[in-house]
Structure formats: C-alpha cells, structure tokens
Figure: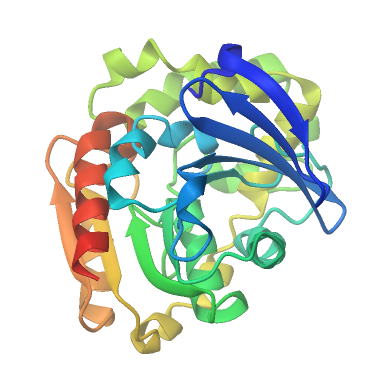
Length: 306
C-alpha cells in the first residue's frame, strides 16, 4: 500500500483540493467532484498535466493496487495519477450512489476537467477497464489519447461467477446485503479472493489491504452496491465503440486469469484495429499483485512507442 505513515505535510490548495506530501515523492490529494470527495495519488507532478498516465483500479481494489507499478513508470517522464474511485479507499464512501462503470466515468470525467488532464494515457484494470472504456469512447473522448486495458470488464462479461465472492449473481439482489451478516461476507471474501492470484499463498499475507475497508456494515453495503452495479449491458454498451476508437490501445492479460478468461483478450485484440496484446505468464486476474514489473514494462514500452 501507499505508505500513509510517511505523510509529512498537508497543504490546502487554492482550487479547493487538499494534498498530503509523502517521503516517497508521491502526493495524495482530495478533490471535490459533483458533491463527492475523490482521493488520488500523484507521482511526477512536475511533468505537468498534459500526457499524464491515469490508473483505474478493479473491484475490491483502490489506488493502493498500483503501488508497485507506479515507481516503475517514473522513467516515462509523465505525471502518474492513481485514483480511488467513488466508494473505494480514501474517496468518499457514498451509499447509496451510482458506482457503476457509467457512474464512475461521469465522476471522473469531471475530475479530469477540473485537473485539466489532457492527452491522457488511460489505464484500467478489471472493472476500472470498463470505466476507462466509457471515458475513452464517450465521456472524455477528447481528453484521452491512448487506452490500456488490463484483464478488463468487456462485452457482456462484467464479473466472474464466483469471485470476489461466491454466487455473484445472488449478490446482485438489492436485498442481498440485508440478508448477509458482515462476518459471513468477510469469511467468504477471505476464502474466495486469493483465487484471483496465481500465488494465493503469498497473496494471503497482503490480503488485509484488499479486505479491510469492507469489514463493517457500511463496508458491506458498499461492496454489495459495487457488485450490484456491475451490469453486463453497461459494459456491452461501449463494446462496439472500441472498433472505432482510433487511438493507440494496449491490452495486457494474465495467462492464468481464472476469473476473466484469456479468450476475452484475444477478442478485444481482434475487435480493436491496430491494438497491441501482451500476455503475462504466471499471472492471474490480480496481475498488479502477481506481476507489477511486467505490467509496468508493458505500459512503459507502449508509452515510449507513441
């Protein structure tokens, strides 16, 4: 995770954002978007807002999932933003709220405008990839210069059948959170989540990073909200747009992804003219944990080739 213990100074900015400076050279900011507080980490702010790399996380994630990737992107000489999407991490835990891929994209499109981000290299993992597709094809089309999709939501495939919880279809019932105890949900999550990694034993040592924020009544409601709003037709709505995107596109996929099968990567690659495909051996759906170096190299090489 990003080292919260290293916060040295908190600065209130003139544009109503708040920044926390950390010893690692990264800064955490808070911005007010619509009527929500959105938190994000910035590395390399001195490179400016044009051409920034923006990182969007997966379900049961947050900006912290990019912690091992971001330092390896320093060589791109671009600002790198890792965002806690609405209802995650240090962003506002809004419930009820629209945290679907469209709701997140609506919020982020306003954030991009507020931060004056232009010619963005937009990188999305899992459900964050679904958000990235909406932004790149619809809501922030003029601001996005290139797209990177990592083991992503796509077409009618919005979530796995039994990950990050078992019986995911049942979890989409609006009554499901009221019929589930927090401790039962957490037990299921702790047992099921490691299946997303190619090395589940190693992952278990870090699993609290991924599970801690859901271990409360509001956390449970938020997680069920996120799952309920993983609507296949939402991701499918932009599937045909990808064929006409007309922007450099990189697809990265873990070859051992049991939750989002590799065949989806090949379909995306076929559907997006001129796209590049990088597959990563010994990496599951939690590829940012399993192979951060491979992801960072692929993104860096892609940026260098633009």
